[in-house]
Amino acid sequence: MTQPVHLSLDINAQRHELDVEPRVTLLDALREELGLTGTKKGCDHGQCGACTVHIDGKRVLACLTLAAQAEGKAITTIEGLSTSGGELHPVQQAFLDHDAFQCGYCTPGQIMSAVACIREGRTGSDEEIREYMAGNLCRCGAYNHIVAAVRDAAEAPR
Ligand code: FES
Ligand code: FES
Image (cartoon, rainbow, N blue to C red; front, side):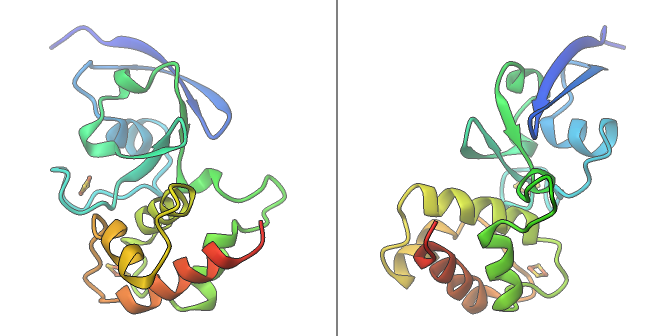
């Protein structure tokens, strides 16, 4: 067995210390080591987007990121989007308002991707939203509602 490495990860503005094998992905570290199970594993191969989180504000696929690569950076997961008082992020609220999910398994990744999509300014039209949300698959076919939710959240005053 490979020697574990000690990592200190900044997740949702909290420091987490852990010892893991160097090959452990950020996705598995979040889910298996830290109990943050909101980030989902749909493929583990970078093809579905269910594992989308933010590193330093940018969306990344946690299944293709080693936990060790995230050290020293600010990681945000779906659990960190709402305020400490429990108030939903506008994108979370918009997903509720527009019924933009069914089973909910793709939803954390969709929401993290949507927050970044809005931040990137890729919400000029429904077509643009569709294109820049295309990295997140939804087997329940909620795409039309997801586009409506992203549009609504992008237009809401912030
Ligand atoms: S689990 Fe990472 S892209 Fe599918
Ligand atoms: S809500 Fe079920 S996969 Fe998207």
